[in-house]
Image (tube, rainbow, N blue to C red):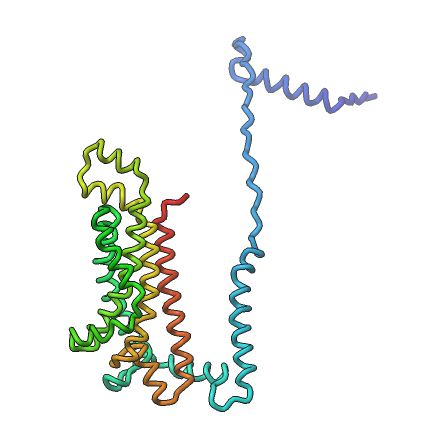
Length: 309
C-alpha cells in the first residue's frame, strides 16, 4: 500500500530555495553567505498634465476680423443690388481674378500690370524712406543729446511738420525737373519728421544715472551713443520708423497720381480715366493690404528688438 504525501505550496517553495542555496558556487566550500543586495527604487517623474489647446483664444483672434470683413461685403452687396454704375462684390471679384491672372504683363511704359506698378511704388518708397532714415535718425540723436541744438532746430521741425505732403511736390518738380525724383523727395520730406521726433524723445528719456556713469568711466561720445543711448532709444526709434513707413506709403499714391509714369497711384488715376471703377476698388484693397503688411513687418521687428520683458 503506497501512501501519498502531500506538500503545501509554501513548503515546496521553501524546499526549492534551499536546493538553490546548496547548489550555488561556494556553498560546498563553506563560503560566507552573501549579503542581500537591495535594489533602490527609481522614482519616475509623473508626466506633465497635457495642456488643452486654447480654441477659445484662437476663435477670438480669427473670428472677429472675418465677421468684420463679411459685414463690409454684406453692406456693400446690399447697397449695390440695383446699382448700374457702382460694381457689386461679385463683379469686383471677377475683375480681380482676371487682373491677377497676369499681374506682370508689359505692353509699353504706360500699360503695365498691377504687379509692376506695386513694385515701382515700393521702390520709390524704399529709396525715399531709406534716405529719411539715414538723415532723420542721426538728427534725432543729436537733438536729444545736445540741448542747444534742440532749441535751435525744434521750431523749424514744428513749423514744417504740419505741411501737407503734396505741398512739397511742386518744390521737387522745380528742383529736380523730373517726376520720379520729385516723388522720392516728397516721400523723404514727409517721412523724416516722425523719426526725428521719436528718436529725440527717446534720447531725452534716457535716465540721467546712465549718463553719469558714462562720465565717471570717461567714455567717448561714440561709446555713449552705441553702448548706452542706442539700446535705450531703440523702441522709440522703431516706433518712429513704423509711423514713417505708413506716411511714405500714403504719400506715394497721391504723388504718383499727380506725376504720372508707373506706380500704383498712377494706375488708379489711369483706371479712373478709363471709367474702370472695379479696378479702382481692387487698387484700394491692394494699397491697404500692402500698407498693412509693411506696418506688421515693422511691428514684428520692433517686438523682436524690444527690451521689455
